[in-house]
Image 1 (cartoon, rainbow, N blue to C red):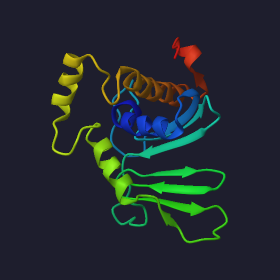
Image 2 (image 1 turned 30 degrees about the vertical axis):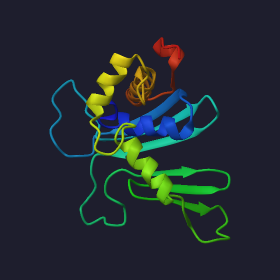
Image 3 (image 1 turned 120 degrees about the vertical axis):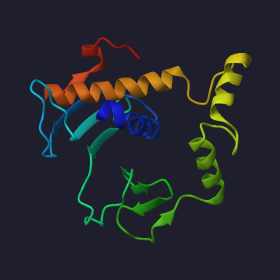
Length: 182
């Protein structure tokens, strides 16, 4: 599930960290009580700690689903970024900053300008209404780099694969061990 479903989330985490991980440690489990075919394990819940080049530590967890009555958790994807000055809670609609010691009110970090930029980023760097595939082909014809090129995509995929390896091996895994140089 980490490679198939979490690759885009991990890409966003790499973007937030402004770096890429050098190692990962993970664990997981099969929570849903469906029969597991002999010789296979498909974990539907997992956690991975990534350590980045710039000493950012990312704890990424994903659970396939939770009970519908558990309304306290927001549905869908969300991120909490913890830092020295406080935390930022990110969803598709909000980015709220909470000061470490609660000396002020939470701050909405998404001004109208940032919301417009976010909308542009969600469409792959294209203007509203512009087709992402048309933009991709234009990059090829014009020999220019797309908004997120192959290096970004490969790093996201390898981040997810490193996490999967750590989960299934039950130990820390590094790029070097995987034979990857970034």
